[in-house]
Image 1 (tube, one colour):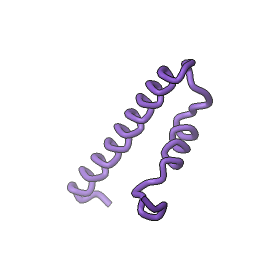
Image 2 (spheres, rainbow, N blue to C red):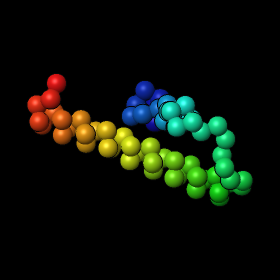
Image 3 (cartoon, one colour):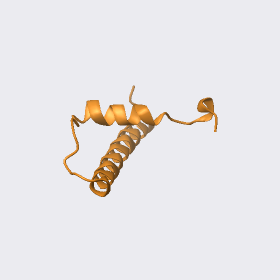
Amino acid sequence: MHYTQRMVEPESVFGQINNNRGLDAYCFVGLPNVSLEVGWLSFAHNLLKKAVMDRNREMAAQGAP
């Protein structure tokens, strides 16, 4: 797949997780543990994005500016 055909750049997601959530270092050691931690962080990131989208959709339906 060509770089311009990607939907989202993964680097921006990791940057948002690192900067916005205050992640400085991983809490666990070892590839399986770090993989699990990244999975949980990604899950939380996606839940927060969905909550914001749902809130915005609900406010738009109510006619809020």
